[in-house]
Image (cartoon, rainbow, N blue to C red):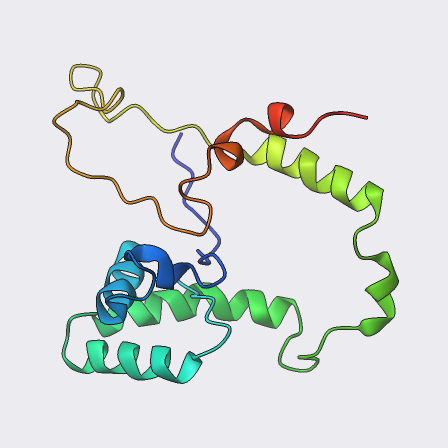
Length: 162
């Protein structure tokens, strides 16, 4: 049974900067690659003006099709409307005291355990995708923890139960 993805894809915080080494070495390439790879919302905390200018230029030059932008907007806007972010765009600070509570961390760990997604082993059993051939092309793993073994271990190993 095929389930069509209903959400939208969000980058890591400053993840777009870490597509190249060193981070930000070719920002235009990073934006182009990230958006065309399917990232709908790119988390740019600081120099958002550069991101907007770069993305606009790539769309105007037709390196990123406008249909890709429209697709991202179609995914993001319903979520923002559902969350009432246009009427109430600022966080409710009355909940600040709830941040970091043990029960919330426990719930987050449970969510991670239940949301792990195994890779599908190709469309054909005669031509499996996994394991990858040693001659396979490069695979991009981006983000601040891309080279951290600790973050790739199963949750049950990473977090010791009390």
